[in-house]
Length: 148
Image (cartoon, rainbow, N blue to C red; front, top):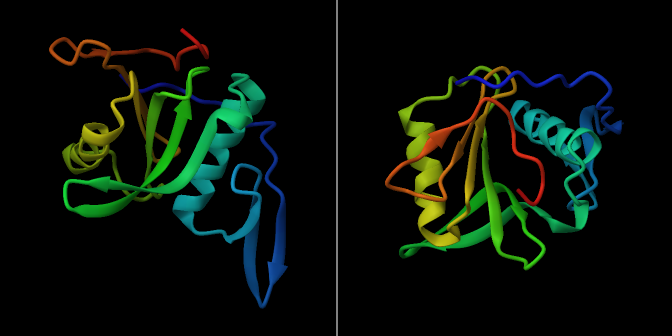
């Protein structure tokens, strides 16, 4: 079930540096090259904090984790108040459709992180699942309120 997200009002802090557009990431507290995927990631982060009230201090972006014998980088993890993964988010560029491959990539991170909620987004399409019972995953019509 595709979730409609209104990004109006989410303002990104942009600058030009060496003829390239950069965006300030308030989670990582640094300037980054504004790629299409980073654009989606920053809008989702802004939506989480500004519109949904997810605590910025409990969000991590682009961190390395071990998945089996490989080191991977997840896009976004929102932690609960006990600092356990609560939501795992996979972001794609707007021109990449959400597909089985996107879902399998998220699942590979889930094996390590074990988050209750899964989010897949390319900015146009957003899907969220409650995976608290992995034998009976429920696809949601909205993103969950923090702490739910």
